[in-house]
Image 1 (cartoon, rainbow, N blue to C red):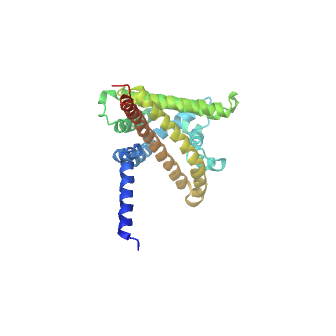
Image 2 (image 1 turned 180 degrees about the vertical axis):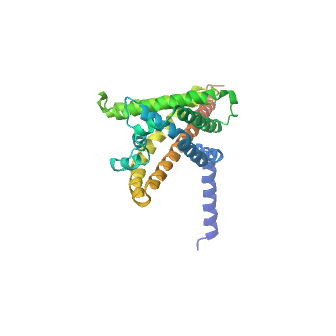
Image 3 (image 1 turned 60 degrees about the horizontal axis):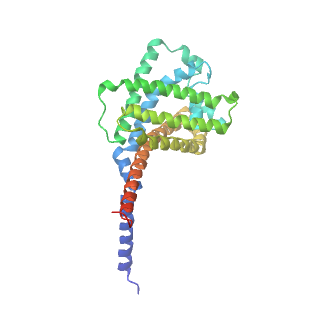
Length: 288
């Protein structure tokens, strides 16, 4: 008869060995850092504050865009990657571009800009937590204004690139330009919001991983969120569409902070691999 106790001990040893290997791997370190960063809670805060402070400002900016004039609903639909059947449901959440622009006063626009600055602070805090840096001093808040201005300019350019089909640029070229522009923006964003405390080379992997994550989120949105918008609109009305949009914003926050964290792991693994190869090279015959 086979000894069941020896089999159980063997399985326990295998599980313990697997757990130890995962704990010491890059994936294990990423899991622990994501838990320490409270990645999901931070992504939910990103979504909630973004919807309260940034979205109202973007509605006015999109309505005031003279060259495009598509409105924020079209921006959001393009970002979600939803199908045509779900675009109408997204548009029902927001006022028409002309109405949003006419009802906005100068004081209201200034208030929206001030509230939008707090969103930059949330992104900066997330990046500081990723790199375990101390919080920046209060007099560096001007960086939030610069970042918010560049974010709006980046979204405007992205919207023109997405909607201007008559520009004579093929869809593949437009996708390549959009991806390259996104990498540059997130690369620069980390450098600015961290106050230059991290080298450009350390921040580049995070920018690449963030853009890769956003591309994956777009595919996921088209496969999952787009049909959900249509079904939730029938079941719950505009509230159902709002829930899907909010879930997508949570995904964006998860990708922004998770991409930066993955970039840090890639950067550290590169140096760890270089040290290991250096040690192996020093032990080769003929070297002292």
